[in-house]
Image 1 (spheres, helix red, strand yellow):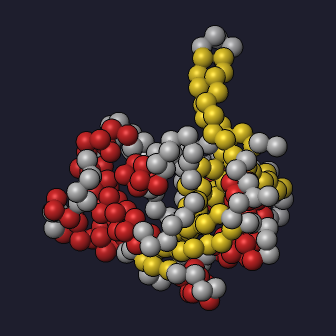
Image 2: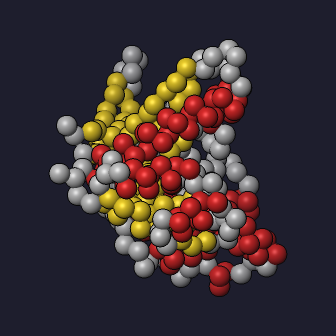
Length: 264
């Protein structure tokens, strides 16, 4: 029997994946419940959907925080436990030759917003945090304060493409424009990179020559609404293990990667 898992959710828009997760909980496809929904966007429709289900919701307005920092940067706004040099050394969103000023502005504004998120989340203990259309990259500052046990990650994301192909914000669009014959979606644990964390599961669908981008998105969303609850239920059943695997290339060089094993 799966344990009852407490699920926190972060959203930015309509909250369709959040609705699918809530419905799966209500129909016992997930042995758990959503305990809060947070957003970076005060106009996110998903906030109202949460309220209709009696789920506490809150907003941290990233746009205001970023605008405020650009106008008047002030280190006193940063959380007391924020170490810019440490976070800079561990992030992997930006390349090593990125503009240092742009990088530091990104990390500082993220830390301010993420500290506010963490404070808003405090009243609602959770076992798993799901990103359900949350359009902000999480920095190491936030990730390390949720993933307190490195062996047991507990932040999931769903991505609208078959990773590692087409990472970023427009997975279905990139898939369609590239001319792929197959599209899909991926659920993965997050790490410090952009859509680079170990993959939990994927679902795919055929893209026909007559399909429009809207057709692809519609078909993809239908797959997402099945895949995400399945992945969350595996977490509730304690069946997910992240392990390091070693592989040898034909030239004899070895490399490691982190993968998710599903315990039967």
